[in-house]
Length: 89
Image (cartoon, rainbow, N blue to C red; front, side, top):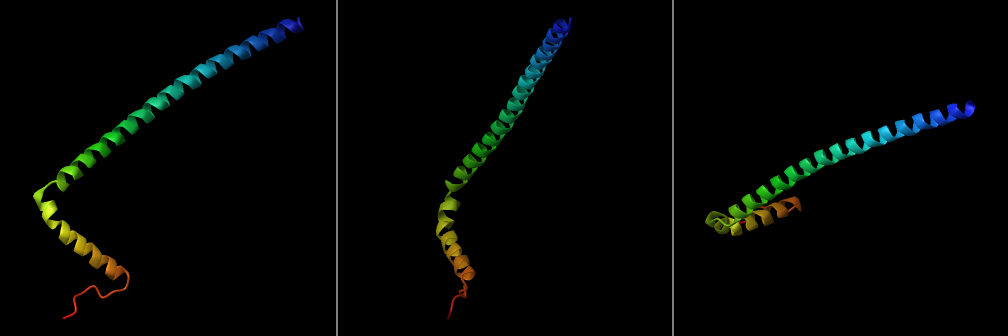
């Protein structure tokens, strides 16, 4: 009789374990799906932003002002390094 009880307990525990593993697998699948959707949205946003930047850089205005941006960047770097930054006349 005690042997039947032990076998029954083992069967109950085994069944419960199977149910919990199935639930874990289901939840992991749901989590993976949510993470994949978030990643897809992020990649879509990055792709869109990249194409917008590329389009902007192809404009005539961007190309004409490129040397001005370069000079301004050098001025700012000089200011940060302790230079005067202004012109000396």
